[in-house]
Length: 247
Picture 1 (tube, rainbow, N blue to C red):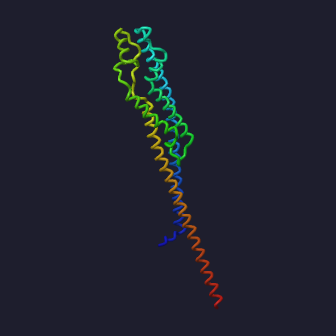
Picture 2: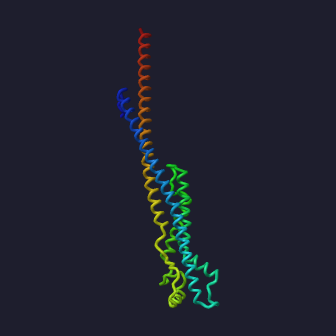
Picture 3: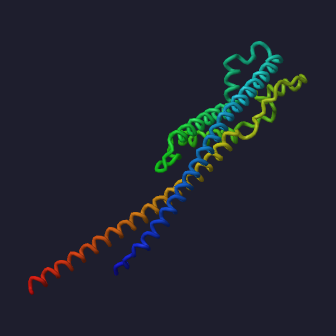
């Protein structure tokens, strides 16, 4: 069953409505894109701050751990001193989760810079190699945090040596393991933000595409109607010519 032909007035009315709808849809899409760009820039600035905080946190923990080792060495004989290599090993083991957290913070910054420069609606930001590396390292950070040895002490050295320092009533820096690295929370915020932005961008793109398809269909109906009218006019003209010849 063929569609009823649209009158010129009705077609003009539909074209005006579609043009108005398209203008509003494009305006909403542009406003949404601007808002997303500003939010991505804000997240990028926060990632710089996260790196600074991570460096400060790491430097504080390393300093405190070195003070612990120094105080413990004061109560040990020369043969049992912690050597430079042993001290370095203890510091690295005690701060490994924060070292990796700092690496993850750097990768998040690179991810935000990459997605800020490359804004494509067809390509998902979660396919970025930086995002995949972040997801690969975060379980390691969490594993180091939750599976760290329980020393029963505030010191980064082992329990026996820190007990030795306590028995002499001298206490060095308190190298506690600390709370969950902020980088994990920030990664969740970034992921949630990008998921919402991706969903909204796809919705706005779908709206624009839908309006464009409706306009194309309306133009197609107009062309079809014009062709049919020309065909009818041609048929009528041929009939008139044939009638004249018969006479």
